Structure formats: structure tokens, C-alpha cells
Length: 81
Image (cartoon, rainbow, N blue to C red; front, side, top):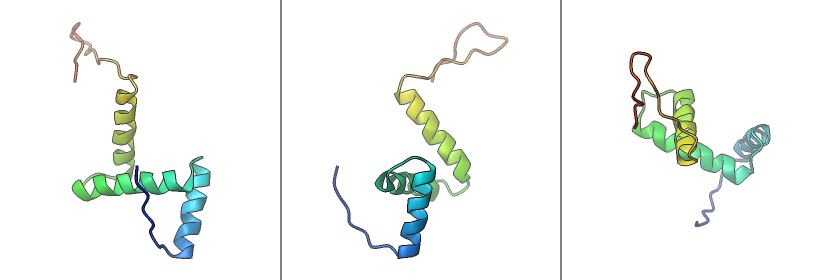
């Protein structure tokens, strides 16, 4: 991983620090999270912030092996993605 130095206004830094504390993250992790969401939002302008967060969370759960096949009520075969 590389380091990137970016200048931001003091007020924005204070806001980022407060959000990071509120979400129990390091400042760098919070900034990284917002950048990831911003990149997805730029590619998908019709998605809400909440939807993007849910998609990224689901992706992380899938990568962690926490996903389970969905079984439709009328079907006995699991649907695999």
C-alpha cells in the first residue's frame, strides 16, 4: 500500500476525525472508506449512499465467507451467485 499526502481544510479534517471516532475507525481508514464510496457513487450516480454502503458491506461478508445460498420458498435448490 502506498501513502498519499493530501491537503484539506482544517474544518474538513475536524469533521473527518469526528466521523472516524463515531465509527470507531482511524482517520486514515475513514478517509479510505469515503474514497471507496465516492468512487462507486461516481460510477453509479443513481445509487444512494446507504445503498452503496450496503453493497460494500455485503461484498465484504461474501469475501469473508459469511454468505449463504438463498432458497426460494417454491424451490428446494439453493440459488448460487
